[in-house]
Length: 218
Image 1 (tube, one colour):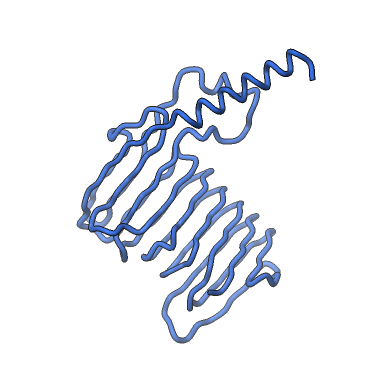
Image 2: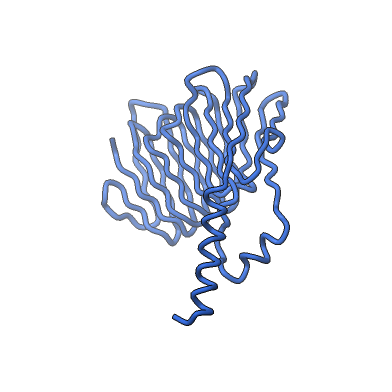
């Protein structure tokens, strides 16, 4: 490795390390009167949904310089909307453009929601983790990894490309992947898989164009 190449590599490593370890946290807690929460993940790289142990919705934003004003909450007549305003720092893209093509890990968020609240999540390139959220869940993203842990209630999930991983618990299931893999309990299926559970009304509907679906039964 030449000295110039080493210097460039070290510079890149230091920038990434600084971006990773300089993140701070902003917190916003509030109650909602609606049973529907809509979450826009634009500006985030990773998103985690958890069950709240209280009646409060709790939002944790991790970013370089977050504050409560970057967590935007708007309660409408039928639903509560949550979104994020992530500041873009000067020359950020110029610094990284020649080195990386993926997301910059600028910001992540964790939201705790009371049980049995209907949650919808929207986004583009985003990794999502649901920590066995106990409520109806709808997820619509273009690309990313979706980790669902144990799916507790109804789920509607549409992803263009990425990986979907989860555990099934007494539910009817329809899984479609036009050009990706479908594996249920380690067994491969082509393009579409469906099963009916007569003892419950819970339904899971997963559709992806290029994504891979990996599900197991509890």
